[in-house]
Length: 202
Image (tube, rainbow, N blue to C red; front, side, top):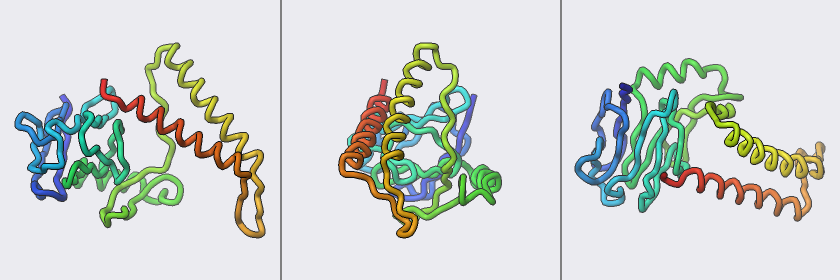
């Protein structure tokens, strides 16, 4: 049985620590949640944190005001020690001080290329990684073929944009025709649609 630590940094319940809380964890305004928050902007059952093999997954449960991890709105997110979870006016940090320090230690010296600590727009600090995420494992052959098709499609789109871009070393800039700029926007829109579909609570 896996247990995790969540500490409330901001909001009406600021300062409360949930140490070694048993998974799965639900956070919401209603009694019966693992963590009940006194916050009218939090839904009755706002989000769930559960284990999936070796990963810890946060799922927004179609809440009214959404969930954010490290200041980014999410529906589905893998959690890492030091991640900041914001629901309504409440902010929680995942992990004990020791776990977060250990993660920082493991990533020290790699800040420029793969991790470190930075300041968010709201002034809070969060650990971040810019190394690429792992591909999912244990896919069925059909799922692997579908994922390969999606990645191949995106790779083709990006390759076309890169090959047509006009690199101007003297001005340290890159120019792309308006059609390609629209193509970039379309790729972003399609990725947003994929993320929305993947993140829908099942």
